[in-house]
Each structure stands twice: as structure tokens, then as C-alpha cells.
Length: 89
Image (cartoon, rainbow, N blue to C red; front, side, top):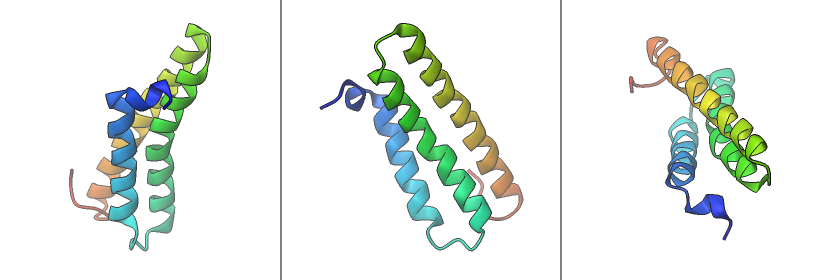
């Protein structure tokens, strides 16, 4: 098992990503679905990638990317709810 797999934030972000894939699987809003799932997938992916780097500087850089992707995802969820693509969060 890799070290990142023990991180609660990684586990929760993987679950969030899977939940969004399931929730949006029948959505006809293809651009929205593609963008939101990419943002969601990038969160645990960047956490994992950062944890695999040896330098603290690189680890922090990728954790920063994951944090930025979470902000992007939150914005997309809000926009999607306002546009009626998804139920409000």
C-alpha cells in the first residue's frame, strides 16, 4: 500500500470522485460532466502524485494543485446547481 492510500483526505476525495461519476453517468450535459469529473479526479490524483515525490517542495506543490482543483470543483458544483444541471449541494 502506498503512503497516500492511508490519508483520509485521499480516501474521501476518491469516494467523492466515484460518487460524482455515478451521479452524472446519465447526464446529457456532456461538457459539464466532463469538466466536473476531471476536476474531481484531479484532487486525489494530485494528492497521490505529491506524496510520491521525495522533496517537500514538490509534495507541497501537488497538494496545492489538489487544493486548487477542490476550489474549481466547488465552483462547478455551484454553477451546475444554479443552471439546473444538478441538485443544489
